[in-house]
Image (cartoon, rainbow, N blue to C red; front, side, top):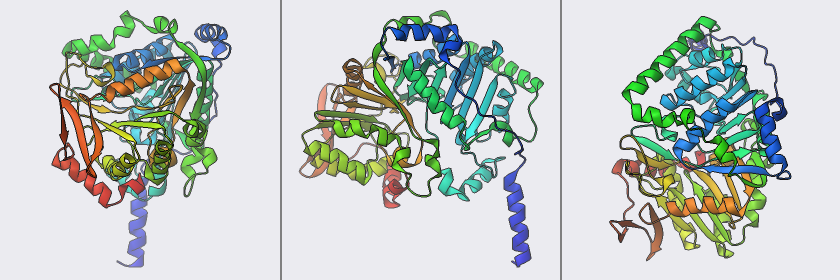
Length: 522
């Protein structure tokens, strides 16, 4: 190929990847609206005022309650809704929430939605159509400017900019009137709300009420006003019209009506928020406690190498991690300690701290490759007395037996995979958020969560963790004669396996990730 031909090919590729986009839009900064600006917000402020600066909390470990809480916050919001998510999957639960968001916008609520750009793959036009509503603004974080038109060109574009494109906004935040918020591990999609036929993610969210919501509002504003957040309209060739929005709304309502007819039980279960609202009841039973909202700086993703520690959520969490003296319990769906995590955990265990970890087993994880990053650390952890528990594959059980967090109530056979992220320090403090104990969460992705100083809340989170560690639900990973074994309970009888449970394909994926050093890329 001649130099001229090479240049021509490069020009054509650049043109192909670029697609059609408008980069002339003015990006206007905006701030969270004060809670005092709505009757709902003022009612929360009045409730919180009796607790002398503390915030109120309620765990949302049940999938249906987690959905209900989001839907009810939309219905109660009077001035603003701020949503920040890593993943949004289409499905009946998402469509219900979008329908409610449109109704909220119709009554004058300002809606700001910030999505990690990966969730927009192939959906720029659809997302931009929702943003055609005068009260809805949607931005994408760390967007890919090349090749947005197709999956193939997006992949090429990411490969041309790997150093930036593997750094994602992993935050999950739902904020209503700057007065109530939901943080935790759940993205938006049927698999997170026990509404998907073949998969249910067991997860933990936390309803957070009062001053903590204002703290989280500051975090949202930092991301929303970051130079890394771009209006979705920049990535469509023509701005959707009011007619486009109306057509989308019509199709949305038709799809929900079809779901009501085709899957009536699931539809009614999700719609309980409309006929049996729970928010006012929950407000009377909150745990009020001191807290700290923690989040990574959005500029974390711009670092050429490892980011400055001052930008990291883990730096803020370090005093709690370093201060633990008796018991540390961690729930992490994707656990890859890396050398620093190994040193920390074994050091705590050597100092006499009881360290327990609950993560996914190879057979239960939805990402076997990540398990391959974790497995090489098991023996060293066990040698120092760290207790490891790996959640088994939980087949769907419509009977609803077993601990609520770890059983599927569903409408079909749903395999359950752990997606929770939580830590409990000395039965005193608990941390709930989007943070996994792995290098991606520490160094590359951005995260958000809340650290709560409350023995009562810590006890609730601890109970959930211990439930998940029960022999009938998890493998207790141990060392016997220098060999890793898996002990569990079936039909009331304990037994031990010397070969890791999981299909050959899952074992191959885990092995391959270890061989190629995927852990270093995580």
